[in-house]
Length: 120
Image (cartoon, rainbow, N blue to C red; front, side):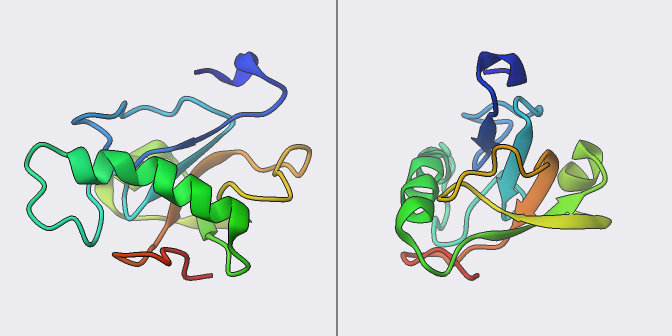
């Protein structure tokens, strides 16, 4: 996936570095809970629980009224280090689309450990 694949692209990273890619791929890159492991997955040695959380979060983002309010961080390095310098906000996934709204960069968002995952 790359920003040139469509008019606008978003990626959700829930198991970066193990089963998922660890570098930004899209116009907007969302790293829930830091993007490496996910709450509610317990001891997830193989990463299957965290990895499968990406599609669950996206599916909920389309139907939730709460939303996944995310914080834009200054860089991907900040996401990896777990130290975000906030530079804006956006909703992860869902409707209406972020296309044309200037949503780009690296984002972090906290989620619940079980459905409903969105915290608003």
